[in-house]
Image 1 (cartoon, one colour):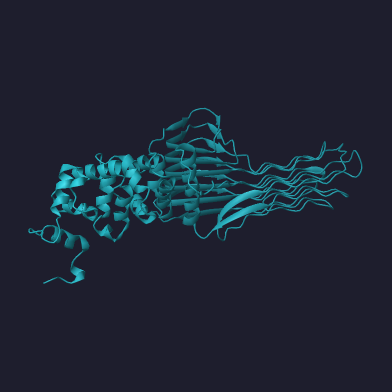
Image 2 (tube, helix red, strand yellow; image 1 turned 90 degrees about the vertical axis):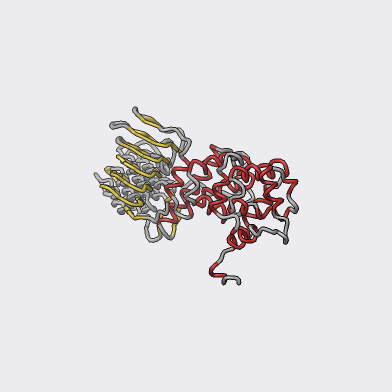
Length: 485
């Protein structure tokens, strides 16, 4: 009598057939002998290889014997593709996840042979392997570092962690072999991505980002000093002596960690330049550079303030407009490119995918056919002040640069102070520049969010003569995200 399907599994049926003592239907004992002797030539038929896990389940062979046998098949018989097909097919009920995850870590198989198999395993199986609690982060890093694992398979392993919200395991994977870094004196970074097991910035120390956006990835991020990024979009240069230039937008800072003490993070926009008496250039002010922002849908990038004067420079998206004169127009504040995501998780996942590809390409020398770019984010520049109609009159002030953007993920956030205010408009006896718009702060946490302070006010307008308008206030977005591991 056969039990109903709801009471049996493919594995239990296979085990029952395998243990049938006469073995008159198939010569399955040959496979046991082949595994025990590590001799694939003893197998009656190649189709029997699909059943390799079953004698292990039946305790007829050991895990090491199975691993050695499969290693022989891959290394000497070029059968990595066949083994992968067994794992990918419906026979995956035989090649159970626990069996596969233990197999790829077995020293008798070796990570090179495991990598050759995984290179032709389906993306869904790779996802299951990446998320398995039986496969630690250190093993995933060893696999993706192995030259035998294809770039696509390595990417799939890392992407699977991010796309399925295994953010902590992703962090521990990419930092597993990285050193720990301590900043005990002031420093300017020459790289835009810093990956370390632990990052520590001592009290009183300032670390300056050297590019538009800097990324910090660590298991433990401990900032007791200050990180500053003043390198957003450029403000328009002064069109002549004694005319205010546009302020530079604030840059971007991204922190991805399991635990984070944020310290002071500063992405404030720079002030617009001051206009003075004695200006002679008879020209319009130039426009500020365009910023880039990543947001969760519903968050709006704040506009800058327009400049003062009859021909005031118009407000930009985040950048302040330059002051105008009675004849010439102040430069417009910078515009901005916006990337919007439906949720906090989708935005964070995208950022991690970009960092995954950076690691694969820059560190591991693997080049996937398609990649996610790094999420460079930064504030817009301010417009320059206008020239004068009569030589010797005061030049106008420049618009303030917009505040930049900070994105933080930590499972546990301890504390932090973030400054993303817009730059002040430049003053002038003629017409002041508009203030830069405030910046954006996204704080994503998994379990706890400690004492956080975020300043995202717009910059005030420049005054003395005509006063420019203030920039609009930015947004501090604090949200708990789904973290599965």
